[in-house]
Image (cartoon, rainbow, N blue to C red; front, side, top):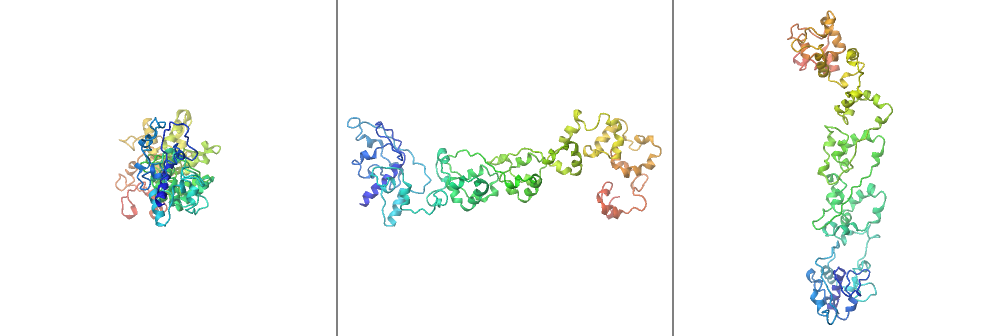
Length: 482
């Protein structure tokens, strides 16, 4: 009896495709069958499954199916119609841990036996009504601990990770979708938590490549490293990246607040963003959090692929006329997105000049009065001096203190100190620091002290030490050069 049962167990394998090309068109595969071989018509010819499927008990795939000569013993074209049969060349891809030899051995250790019909025939069907393994029949012996097969069952009990299979593209694409994955907020709020607690379940249907198709920096999510990468025999379909907008990003103040968030939690940003996303707005040199993010060419995921977008303040009426005030008060913020060239494209274009056409002729009084901040666009020590020297009102390099612009006012040399204290920027448009030091230094010709009587250096330095650095190379209060 045990031999008969073992022989019947061999019929388990006929669930695999045999790729038979049957000339007799009257033998068609029934629903649930994987081949056109008419088992029931041969029931008296093969009392034991081992008559054809010799290698099932040992797991020898080469002898799982008979060779073509076995059919020709009867179907020789004379006694019976000739048929063409080709045995499958490879095992049917599966992600089940099940093997026939292990199943037989486990049943024997428990003192029980299992027959082919237990799994491969419908309940109440005949012995040769061979079908694919019937999952409900399996569950008649193996209790299912979950209420939903694809949601709360321990997948690793019966299945190996997808990465260890040799599924084709279509098979991977057709894997069943669990009910909890259909929730509208699954990607936003659930899949990360489930991946942390149920990594084995994720690995049953997903490989690491599925995660890295969206996640930019896998180093920020150790759970991704626990999901196996696809093996060499697994053919994966392409997965389009899908990104959702977090609730924090939908706030009106997010654009202004995102920099502090990036400094505190840069790893969170790199889950969806590459360095290229930040550089869509931030100009070089980029902030430190941006430099720590991976560039797009070094990642599998494309990232959100942001495009430059003006902040809400730029959309207010009159922004173009008012932006100069903001640029003067908070230039660092402007420089995070704009370069100097961006400003010059407008402020120096002939069709959109900032100054009126005859401004050069009367700009001196405007610059001296400070009504316009020349330094916001011009380097007064270079731009202004170059122009002044071209028109002959600058100070020649060989005679920096000779006749020049100030000749029209008698006694100017004795009065220039007050003007310099009121608007040193104007002086710098023509003069260099060395010009002043020719007189206002201990090594100068006249050794004139520029500070005047009752000067308190400690008080001045305490209020703003940068003023001292305009002339002094070292701290004069600590014995440095005056």
